[in-house]
Image 1: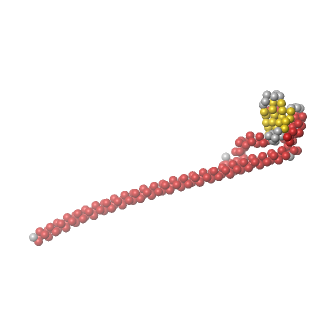
Image 2 (image 1 turned 30 degrees about the vertical axis):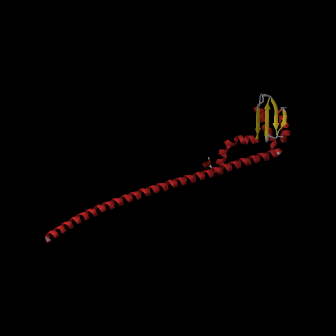
Image 3 (image 1 turned 90 degrees about the vertical axis):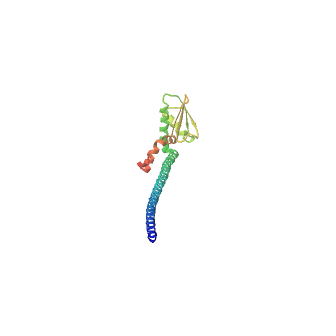
Length: 196
């Protein structure tokens, strides 16, 4: 019986060893699979985090570039506006310098008379300060329309024809009319070719 007990112990030990070996093998497989899944999950999260980080950097760069462009455009606009403001000041100074303004004013009057060629000139409207200049210029041109003074005409002349057409030529009006056309050139002159 002792042999039977020893034999049963031996078989039980062998079966325990086999079950234990299979359990350890299965546990190793489970641990390896769990480790692999954990590494894959970690790698996936790292990729997602990296992608999110890169997307955030791209958004931040884009926002910074937009802000820089906005500031540059504002500076360019302010620079261009200051040039036109300075030009208006120069025109105002010219209008105040009667000796320098007289020949310019005469050209403006001749210009509106030429534009109205063939039409009856009913009246010329000028700033009250320019009335005498207008009368001299018209006399020199051999035309005698009514000269009317109005504060809303500055730095030039407005001509009304018999058929109610209006031809206006003022230094301030010409500057304003050319502003859109000249703004690009002024910007290029101030800030270089990249400004346009």
